[in-house]
Image (cartoon, rainbow over all chains, first blue to last red; front, side):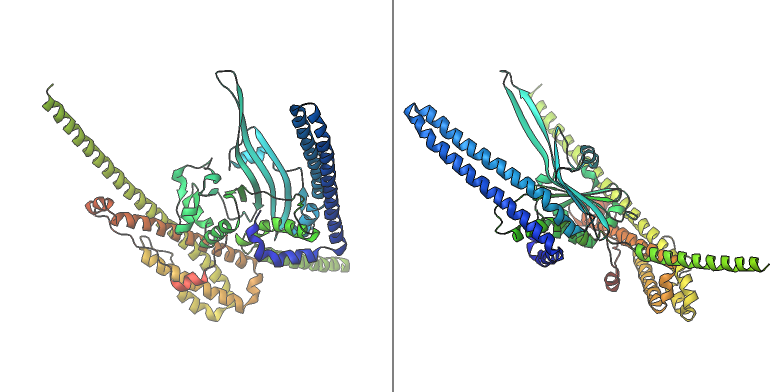
Length: 352
Length: 191
């Protein structure tokens, strides 16, 4: 989704590729090459069948022009159908074999990718970031962990299909899409962030808030940030606590680098990021010059989810790790003392 | 009714409309000023609360460090200074001064921790340290919110035509809560 992240990520991509076991890398390349094989074969078959049908359609000229046109149309249609079916097969084969492994390489062995899974309709309704209607599709669900921060992301399409009948009895169907993009959720350190807050890019595509009204809009000290984003919260002090000057800078950077309309929401210690107009692109790309290039492009798709954790400091533990370690040490020292005490008591008991 | 009469009624109606608009605008502008004054006072009390909390936490941290650094007791006591908490009705300038002293105290405590690594394993101290950092971030938030309200309020005081209402009620500019340069350098804010 984020082509602009290319340059700073080249080193990371090379590192991730080097971390993949040589035999796994070889397997991935084989799959990519097999897909290319399926794709090329399909393209050739489609062209051949079309050409044959196209040639045969000239016989139609002996009958009449209409027959000729119909036969031409059929030859084109059959060609496209064969090409489409082959492309779908190559894509399906690619998606069920490659992205899952790349996801694990980027986010660790516990990460997962499910091509046909996504967010539930009820979840999307509950977060109230955009409208929902009778069209709902979701796919490409990735779950993983970045520096101890759990996250899940999936593609979501939400819209409304409406059928109208005019005075003459003609029926029309109109489709309105409310959202076509990515929804990501991060479970960051929620201990200190209470309440809720919404940040919307000040652009048409980001839509207006479904929870807050204009009177909940809060201005900050940064003119550019105020121009580019609307921040809504019922608790102004909490909003200033969450939106630190560093956070403001991070948002300006995110807007610069990530395409699509951004909506950020903090709800019960979760950070939800919705990007309207962006999509995970895990499809097989026939344009890629090599299997290596295809793998690189997949890694590039995934890196922004890591980058969000870094730039927004979502992995900040507020000294909790040091505290937990100290507590564990204290506990183990206490257990040792208890054990020693017990041994002494036991030995005294034995003596008597 | 004569034409003259109609014109008179129209003129009176226009004058009334203008008067009502002016009165409406006057009341709304005055209310805006009052709302901002309330917001500024709220934010100031937020600063008070955050400073008091930080003061209490630093005092507790100071009590723990005393056990480790007896010879530094006097230095730290001097820095903390106020033993009774933050006096009521303190001006933003004084609050800024208190905040600066608290930062100085926090820095002294951190230096003590560096000298006595045992403190880093003291769970009570670590908890207090985390809370103190949180209190500092709340203080930053309250300070920024206060300054943001003061900025808008002061702008309205000076900008025509709202300045007419401000001058009539003798509203005065509010002071910003200034953070000293070295404080800004030291305080690391993270989300």
